[in-house]
Length: 65
Image (tube, rainbow, N blue to C red):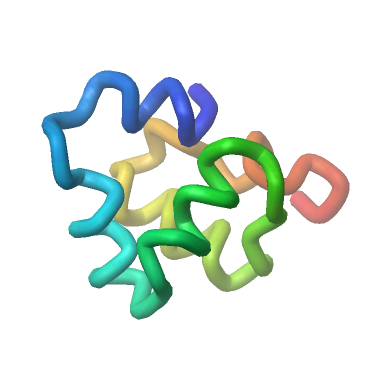
């Protein structure tokens, strides 16, 4: 599952909540969700944990994982 697909199934405000947990801005996370920026390896791991492996790091950065 992509990060976009994950957030499509989440309630309003989920991007903001995850951004706060990741200690990044909502804008930065939105850029990642929409494929305009790539998450760092560390963010990939944290996103995988926060989504309970619904979004896997190898989907976020296949060239790294």
